[in-house]
Length: 134
Image (cartoon, rainbow, N blue to C red; front, side, top):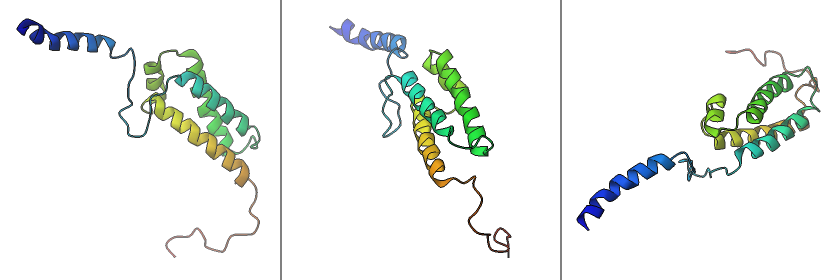
C-alpha cells in the first residue's frame, strides 16, 4: 500500500502532462466557457461579418480596415487546424477570446449599418466644437 500511494503522484503527473493538450477543460477566465468547435464558430461569425460589411460603402474606412482584419483571420481559420497555432497567429489570447471579439464585431457592424457614420452630417457642427482648450 505504501508503494502504491507514493507512486500515485508520479503516475498522475506523467499522465496529466501527456494529456494537457488533449482536452481543454477551462479557459481560466471567469464567465468564458471553453469553445468545443471554435473553427466552425469563427467561420460562421466571420462569414456574417463580411456579409454585413457588404452594405457599407466600399470607400468607408470602417469597411476597408475591418474587411482586411476579418479576411486575414478567416483565411487563418480555413488553413490552420491547430487551435494553439491559430491563437498564436491572432495574437489576442485564447481562441474563446477571439470568438468573443468576432461576436462583438458582428454586433458593431450591424450598428454601423444602422448609424451610417459615413454619411454627411445633417447640420453643420458648432464653431470651435473640436478646439481644445477653449
